[in-house]
Image (cartoon, rainbow, N blue to C red):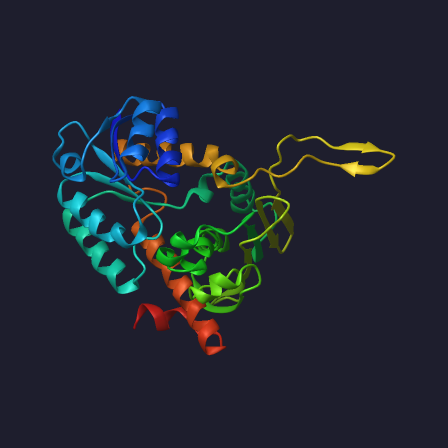
Length: 335
């Protein structure tokens, strides 16, 4: 089966997905839409696709699916629009910045019987999948605690922060999804702490740049997440799962997997610089999974429900910081 794609948005993440589509057998990049002509032209030159408007992509008979890489505040409207147009939809997280709006959007997806996959790429990283396979095989016993470290090398532009919905909805949301995936149970409570330690301007924009979160399930399983917008040593991405019978960990990726030992000590190459290089394989793998879901007419691995729950955890974290207490996730979903 060959799936013909249109990419909506040719910015940084649009470029990542265009590259992923081009690298995957069974996927063809037909067209890109972006109001910035130079951005669209760059993808056209790289991959030989058409430049079309969103209206043209919506009406196109030669496009089966779209990848939504536009600003977050456009996601839910575009999902509904293309679901009604009969296109399969792959949307970057989050679906929207409002839980209520996400719930309404998912009703449209269900009513139109559309396929919607949400872009939680970290589930598709080969190392993280191997970690999950070890957990599922019972090699460390029953899961008890998950520790996720996710640190960006530097903060994004201020213009991005203004529209992102904040660190919990933009950055930690990936870790919320991974935590749910690894815990094997839904999270019941969220307790978070947040500070501005990297750049005062981020605080002036109403956001944080340094956060820690503790998630707890009904059975008492815990996940601890630590995020910062500044890791001077590179893109820090680590996971450890502690079980009743042992532990399994996924370590950082480096520019080369070597270690030099000499009279000056032990030396290893730097970490990869950011998500575009660290998660190249994961971005391709999630497109493969999307195509497989379309081919087999089954639900994709990361659904609209996953998008909803990750956003609910983000909102619970924000509420926890604002009110200085542990927040039950039901407070967000039932609001």
